[in-house]
Length: 333
Image (cartoon, rainbow, N blue to C red):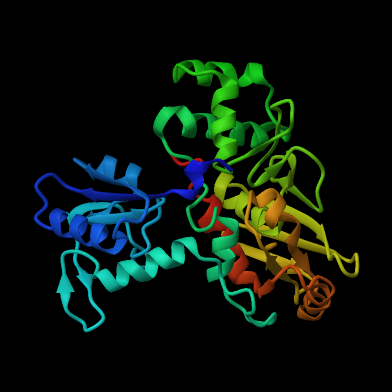
């Protein structure tokens, strides 16, 4: 990935004239204390822009596009927003201590020494969603439009689109197809081969993997990993049948979705989320370490055989939630 991926991007979203905007900027700059970062103040004028930018009240502070302070079930809003400090007091911006904590979390790796049988989704979401930055491409420079046309083509045809399919979308942005794809690849929204052809556009793979996903309309696609497969129904709003295998025993694992419900076979099947140390694109850092397993026992066997890849067991409900949270928003307008 290029240097832009290593430089933190902090966006402060406010309504015009927000009295707490200066406080938010002051505390962001205080916690950075000269640390390299791109800091931008963006005014949001209406509900549509709030939804586009992800503003959950004014001010909202985004770290690489993610609102780390968003309450559960938060909806985009141009309303006034208050933050609760550790002592319970309300303020117009997160405290310096709170900002320092989330800034550290946005650049640090999850603990690699956590017990292998610990069931948690926090680090799993970090691993899958571009180190916590999300997989929804930015709207600027035609990136989101190109990303979405690639994803829709996969979901409709089952394979990666050729350049000719993408040219009209690139032309609308005044750019070349190769230029847009290269920028998306640099930010790990997709991967390319040496000839610039699309190899993967998370959650889809252009080459066979362990995970086959058949959509309700008959289209069959390969997914990059187990979590990616579980994110497809939320993204395309269609029921699917996921067919995979336990990498230890070779036994089949099947997940059939019906709306928000899912049936797992066998009943004790789980997902293991792992990541190789050192970072890098998800395709090489973690995709082959995010698999379905028939039981907790086979996960532990796999982890014991791969001590260089820290892994965590994620239960069925959490795995589905991570998939939906990561990929559900990708095709939204």
